[in-house]
Amino acid sequence: MVTVATAPLPPELHQAIPNWNDRDLHSKPEEFALHVMWCVLSGYVTAMNRINAEVDELQRELGNAPRNKQLYQIMAMQKSLIYFESVLNNTMPILKDLRKGERFFTTASYDRALQNVMVEAHQASTMAGVTERVLEQYNTTVSSIVSNNLNIIMKVLTSITIILTIPTVIGGLWGMNVPVPFAHQYWAFWGIIAATALLCGISSYILWKHDYF
Image (tube, rainbow, N blue to C red; front, side):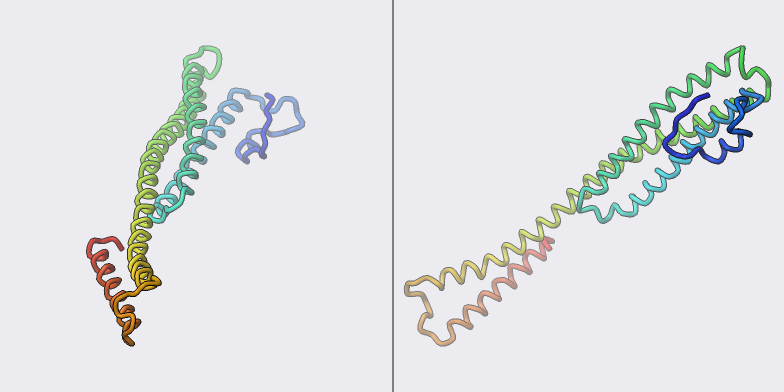
């Protein structure tokens, strides 16, 4: 058996290999193969548990999603699940063929061990499918939340713009270099300021009443 890995092997595999320097790594290759398959599929279940934990953490952050960070996280998780499902879907037929075969895994103990491996593979496949459906729902939810938060921000900014437009218009009218009403009144400046503040207050109240703030 030849394998290449970018990370150290899990400790469960080390326990199944008595001597790394011996050519005959295991006296019962069927037991060794079953143990390797179980460790690999158990690793998929562990990885799915980590993804589910990340999904739960993402769920707690859905209330504050003004940016696209959550969407990128969901896309990365969905990409991983596609690889997981592809491998697991190809693994199940192989395990079924091994169980039906007449050359290997013919004893009752091997059959039970192979059944345990198939249960582990089925569990990992089921978890991948369920998590993918949950992420699809989260993807829709996050998109709706992001759009809703942006609408709220735009609504508030629009309301502020409307309120700030009032003093701008009044200041522009009374700032023209032409004769204007109350130009020679000593109270004109403070009167215009008071009228502007009153109009801004009325506008703010109307916008607040219509839930634009």
